[in-house]
Length: 362
Image 1 (cartoon, rainbow, N blue to C red):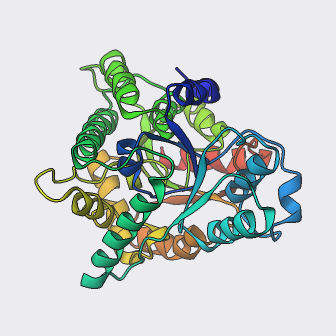
Image 2: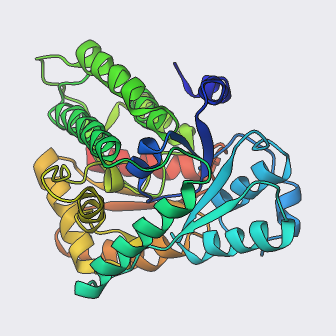
């Protein structure tokens, strides 16, 4: 199984009677969808040429949003039963409004508004209310929500989190034989696979790639939104640099939250998962907390530096990075900021900067 089989896999699930939802980045209660026989297919970086989306979006909107809208415009999502738009950032919220209010797709659109920091008691109640409202709305497409199915979905999600933690831990110890691209490929399959299928792939990957030997390659922390462009992962492999850990929105920042408490109300368990996530720019987290989180990654993994791979025009990340760089510099941790577009090659200048940074790390 790989990402090229994505549509084939989704159509096979649709033929089995499941609903398919196109879900835009980044944080949403996927356990709720699983429990209602809805397959979430996340829309991050479809391999498309952008044409029609430019007529609907401002010039300073990031390529993740542009590609998501382009997917809809080109009819690549015509087989899905609904769209889910989390309120991740202003650009995604803007796209949601344009698609729902002006483009008038036949596909129903749903919205999920999670609170931003600083958090208080009412924030938790608000999140719970949003979960229950979404569950009520989705019953038009999936099976009526059953508490036992929701608890089962939470247990499967916890299993995936534990497997991912094992995978990340083995890599940080240098006990994992995979390229940077292979590592993120298998993680990202969870963006559309049902949990049982992803669990099987993760277990096989861990068994095949784990080694008792400790690798000696140089390592860095990768921060940003997404492990793309793939050219960056390949370049680091070429330079024999391992990504020891990451602070990526589409990876560890949302996937390595502590296991959900299966002894409490399942809605409360899902809500706790959101509030237990690491500091994140899309949650309005305190910058000093995020800097401390990244510094701990560096210390625990033995990484020699941090690469901030920022998708051009990503406002949440661009607001954080200058201060993060300053705080890292105070602690003697070198960092490199790359301003990239997804699905594009690295420029010659960018390659030179990466090579120079790696050489400086020694």
